[in-house]
Length: 209
Ligand code: PRP
Ligand code: URA
Image (cartoon, rainbow, N blue to C red):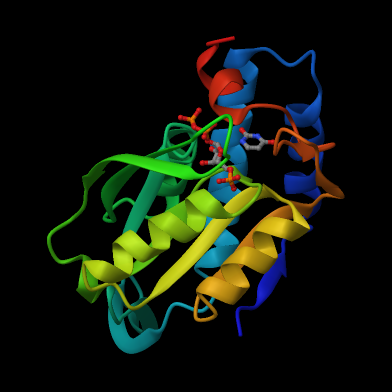
């Protein structure tokens, strides 16, 4: 069964409060989402395997450790996931980046996919799927299915705000995928928006409303 990791680091919680604030404009919103993503990257990579090595310092040889195991891929769900990529790359600069285009039909709230470009060795990478909002869970479940259909077997989902409904949907449809979130909110409203949430993440990032 998926594990849900609620990341309650004080810096993340403080910055999350700022992006929830309806008076925060697009530039600050973008900067804060990037900063939170860097901090989330730190938490989500906590279990990367290490191997022993040695390093020569100016004073002698030190036993040391380096990251081993699979390479990392960051997969952004368009559009809003784009806002999380740069922040993640700051800590994982060698990661390859993939994009999956999905939007919700405003009437049915069902995910509609329109784009997919992934690193060709996606099946051999540890994947971090990023999207700020996990609402009904339809978009995340669809993106995870896309990745699995292309061979992915190691996927973590990183969001900033999750609704209980979305968590349940991902747990049920993809029990092998762990979820990392900075907040679990109360519910969805009748339009499928997270309450209290932060509004429409894509529009707030890119100033399209
Ligand atoms: C938002 C968000 C997620 C999705 C979450 O994207 O970035 O991808 O909604 O909702 P769900 O869990 O109910 O599927 P949106 O559909 O607004 O597309 P956009 O990022 O292109 O604006
Ligand atoms: N997508 C968003 O951007 N915000 C929500 O609250 C729900 C879906």
